[in-house]
Amino acid sequence: MKKYELDLDVKEVRLLPSAYCLLKLTSDKRLPEMKPGQFAEVRVDNSPQTFLRRPISINYIDKDANELWLLIQQVGEGTGRMAAGRVGDVMNLLLPLGNSFTIPNGSGSSRLLLIGGGVGTAPLLFLGDELKKAGFEPVFLLGAKRKDDLVQLDDFQQIGITYITTEDGSSGEKGYVTDHSVLKRESFDRIYTCGPKPMMVAVARYAAARGIPCEASLENTMACGIGACLCCVEKTTGGHKCVCTEGPVFNINELTWLS
Image 1 (cartoon, one colour):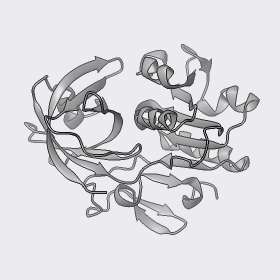
Image 2: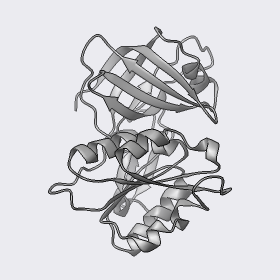
Image 3: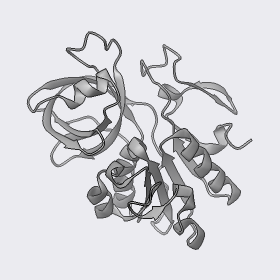
Image 4: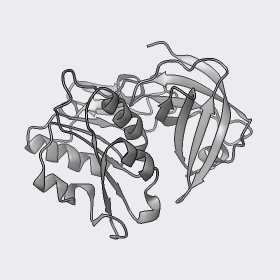
């Protein structure tokens, strides 16, 4: 897929709980095609300490409004500067980068479960919307430490049934996503996951034990986004691979998590 360097206009800056921020970007030209699971490398301007672009998952594409959504968690100077942007600012992005989740062929009869944790829920909103457009009924299982860490719940619930876990029990069921009762009482034909690595490893082992196909979107440090810096290399069953170019989405059978 062709990659672009674009200057996009900041259309909306929405500050969310727990240092999250939703940026909606647009252009006077039609945005290029993007797929769920891909990401953008965002240049951080006016920040002398931020030399490298920041990799941000594509959260959602609103084709009618010609908007690209980026969900950002402020964890340092770079992401803090991005969240401090104002409507009318211009942001420079390289996109779309990486591969994408697999949209199944055939009818929408398959049971599809999308499991996310923390900021790892970001790419699942776009994925769920694309699955729904393809005729499926996606089910979301979202985990967080506490209620305030759950963001975009209304958006997820508009797309599909949404289950919640929080570690402190302040919303949904108490515990980790792999503890949720839906995994014990219902069966699924395919699982997608993104979030902290320990969570994804647990999800991958759950899926493998039941013979459920599963894809995981890795969140390794991706400094360049084009496979040049080798910061994001992941050991796989086929050797070491750059997550930014050969991922970020991998079938769990390609990873070494199951051994």
